[in-house]
Length: 181
Figure: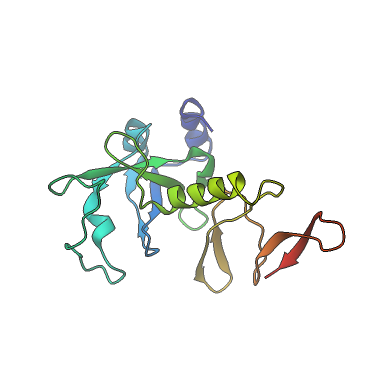
């Protein structure tokens, strides 16, 4: 979906609020609830939030001894660039949509601690090295409650409720075959 198509999609689905959803390297969900107007005005970089969110530990306590190169000399902002191909209507909150984001610097450069950026780097490295003949397929899975699973659509994911599937070379033909892990 393009930013030009977004307004019509939000109208069609009666969306008044958009929740941005990104993750820290610890797996904490980082995001904001934005009015539709504020979300649309924030594009293309998306809403800003304090870079301190990447210094929280899994319990929510700040770890101020850690300072990465992307951080500003004092506490500064980062952006949550929405991936509009992932926007969906919230299944349990009427009038709300959820969208996955990539974390970027205030200039729009990808943050090296953004899990989606890290995953793209791994996929790219694998494609350029040992996996030239095979498609590497990965994705995120978040178990929120029994029977409820959220997956990351932007990077293809092959999985069932209880196992991952991987493409591996067949011993007989050298062609890819499926194996579950």
